[in-house]
Each structure stands twice: as structure tokens, then as C-alpha cells.
Length: 472
Image 1 (cartoon, rainbow, N blue to C red):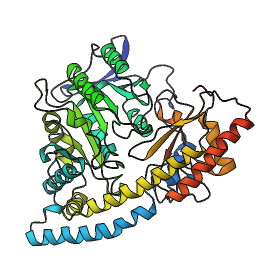
Image 2 (image 1 turned 180 degrees about the horizontal axis):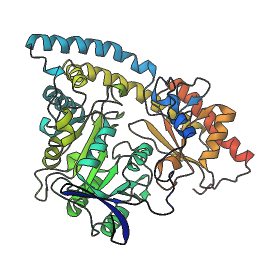
Image 3 (image 1 turned 135 degrees about the vertical axis):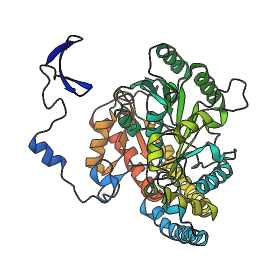
Image 4 (image 1 turned 180 degrees about the vertical axis):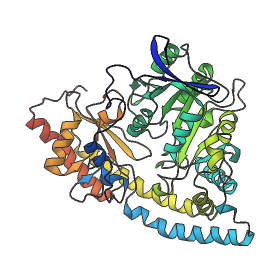
């Protein structure tokens, strides 16, 4: 039978004592719009090409294409990854011998929701050594990497209809990930000197905070501010201590979370320790501490191997408790439990410390090689940041130059490419910028490619008959 409900015709099926109302599809809604696909589209979607790695599927990111020097990707190259063979062979032997000695073989059982105890214990010691700040085991939840950590946070502690504040330019695939949550709104925050403009962030928070959001005992944050506070992606910059303190106070006063993409912190090139992470400023001894508003989202992808898919969330007791009691984690247990055991051995044997030391020296040399070239060859009407850590250098061309067609031209003519700035923006800002990565190629290759790109900028300006603004 048919009945009208709230102005819509619904069909009611009665089964025993339960009734189900099935809304009719709105007139004018096409099948394609509702998610259906044609036979041709389905055949195309079903093709499974023999790709070997993530970058195979995207020509713009395929750093293994030897015909082009691609400075786009934030991932280590074969020269660094080959060391993982020996490291993981040693760690595997150690871990399996330990399992044999104990005789319980818990490593092959479902793990506790927060992650393998031994791994979190060794990770806390490792991070304390490397950060130069205390890290507590009980503040750590193991993940399958920073992307999985971000997903856990979005689904577990944030309002389903909440707001995600992002820097005007930010990690581009995080922007892609946020699109998977269509009920959440992404709000871009202007930047000043290539870091967030905190005055603007505060204005936007005030404009949004009094709207209606769906909150409960688990969905405790109406909003989150997603950022890369240390060695920012893409700008390479780091928040100052005063800025960190202000972000913490703002988050407490307005009851939102700050999710820090802390994957580059340990790749620091000028001091014994990296800058204090933002989480360190959310001190539980403060009189206005509310259980933790800052969430540090870390990963071994940049400091060991992306393939391991092991990371961690460091957070206060409120968030720890919600994550530990997640229905998803309770069903599957600890994520990547077996590999976490290998990582525990890597940390216990100090193998990761030695490997990280070698990575820092390698990347420090690559960063210096790149910046030396830019200091000498980058036209004076361009500018760049000189980062003290991380993977990336952010180059600014004259404002009337669109980096997208320039990079296409540079790729075709000079066989060198990087990522145009608009890719890092929710609304296409920073069109005149370029991000260069030092992660994959050798220092020599990076220096040669950067020299070519600097010369290409001058040539492109001449070909396009663009007069640079020397007052920038």
C-alpha cells in the first residue's frame, strides 16, 4: 500500500511486526547519478593491470620511469629500501625465536585493540630517544600507517557532519581522503609566510562552532584542524613554539581536535633533536587540560619502509579510550599484528636507530644539494623556503605564472617534473608554486634536475614573453 510521509510517496512493506518504508527514487534522478555504470564502464573498471607499485598507475607520479627525472614523490628509492632486506631478515629471526622460546605464539593470535604491547613499549622508548621528549606507551595506539590513523580519527571521534579545517595548501591526498566523508565540510584556512594564519583560523572556528553537529559519548569533537606542523607538506615550514601554544589553547577553548600529520618530524637535519611536536604542548599538568585535544599521527613509512604499513596515534586518555573500544578494532583486534612484532624487534635491537641515522645523513645531503643549486641558479624573481627537515622544498614563481602548464612544458622539453602548487589546495590556490621532493633520487640526480628546472623557468618566461615582477 502507498502512503504520503513528509511530502514524499513511500511504499510500505509489512513483515510481521516490522514495517520498512522504501522511498521512491526522485523523479529526474538518473541511474548513472545513483551510482550505476554502463557495461563499457564496468569492463574498464574491472581491468587489473600488472602494476608493481603504487606509482605505476599514475604517470605523473611514476618515479621509476627512467625517461624522466620525477621530483614529485615523497617515497624512498631502491638505494635506501634495499637495506630493509637485511634489517627485516634479522628482525624476523629474532621475533620468531622469541615466539619459540615462549611457546604461546601470541604473535599469530588476534592482538589487543591498542596494538602489540611489546611494540608500543619499544616504540615509546624509541620516540623518547629520538624526539628528546617523553612518550608514554599508554598514549599510543598502533595503526596501519598515518592514512589509516587519519581514517580512524575521522570515523571514531569526530562528528559525522563536522568541519575539517585545513591549511590553504596541505598534503594533497589528505584532501582526496576527506572527500570520502561527504557529510563533513572542508574549510581552508589562509596562510601567512607559508604557515597557517592563526588569526584567520580563529575567525573561522568562531564562525563555525555554534552550528549544530551530531555529538555523543564517542563523537566528542565537532571539528578537527588537520595540519603538518613540523616540516610541512608542501611548504617545509615548522610552527614556532608560540604558535603551537596558541593552537593548543584555541583547541581547548573551542573543543575541537588538532590532528598532526607527524610523519616527517624525525627527519631533521640541523640539530640533535627535532622541534617539539605540537602534542608536547598539550600538557596534562596544565590547569585547563581537558583530556587531550592534540593528536599526533605518526608512521614508519618515511623512516623505515612504506610497505610495512605500521604507524601510531599518540593521544590523550579520552581519545585512547574511544579508539581502544572501537567496534572495528574489537572485531579484528590489533592491526598488522604480526608486522608489529617485527617492528618491536627492530626497535629493541636498535636496528631502526642505525637505519634512521643513515637516512638523516642521506636526506641532509640531498637537501643541501638541492638548496645549493637553488641559491645559485633560481632566478631572482622566484623564491623558496630552506627547510630544516622533511622531504620538500616549496618554490614560488612570479604570481602571473601558472605552474601547471609550466611543468607540462618542462616535462616535455627537459624531461624534468615536479608537482604544481594548485594540487595541494582545496580551491586551487598557489597556482604559481612548485613542490620538489628529495626522497627518491640521489643528490647528484636532484642537483642536475634542479639546475635544469631553474634554467627552464628563465626559458619559459622568455618563450611566453612574461616580464617578471622584481618587487615580489
